[in-house]
Length: 372
Image (tube, rainbow, N blue to C red; front, side):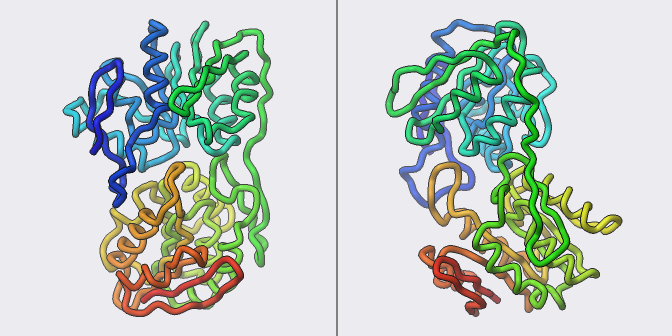
């Protein structure tokens, strides 16, 4: 846990999931900068917070009963735990998942600029109708993570923006709602064919690999028909648009599929793609911390292309968590199939949880491993 100081009081904050790196904090200078500027502005009115990474902004402003809008279930859980740790009311913040649009009208908006410009454009496009006259949107990021086009999108959908001076390597972009703007209604969904099938993958903004199949998934896909053949209960863990699970469902019509991801947009995309491909067939869809809530020993096969970062931090904490959850969720004789970059050394790390680890395929950058 780390102390977080702002004009709105002192807090103790922690990341979720917990990290093995004690230097990683649940906040950064961009959070502090946003709170400092909001306090200095003396603006009042309904408040919306967007993409609050671990709840630092919402916890600091909980007395103002803000809404918090974001695509990450892990961020939602971090907010919940940090509210509890600081003895703040659980219902002080209204969380709105990224798959929905806030229904309130807002005078003030604090926005953490996401990695995906398409996601930012989608959020700004959906945000504009919810803004009250004279509403101010303050967007913040660490300078090294601030996309050059972020200001252009703010000007397109909200109004002319001003960039702040850098402060502790953070910068803010501020815009006031311009009622004269007539911004475009951009179609931000993407789609492409699932290789080796007649199926099409449709992707919401911000979903991993939304423009094309990533190299790792492409390496694993041809192996799935044989892997899934005898499995009755299959999970696509960290499903993204559902490519791995869809391939398994295609080659095992009697299997029960479960799609899991911490992204609301990812699970919504996977659900759309599954029902489009297999009308009338049932499957499970979970926005959660991986397989945490799945019944122990209930799965025969887990397919996983794990993320190697959370927010902007690269590491294997999330992958190791998914490996551990898979071990618990797999029945006797069950298998976990993982694709990952060679340099991540998953063949060694998987042996912390499984007795046998074998390599099924490899390319110059990726390996596919089977753990049982």
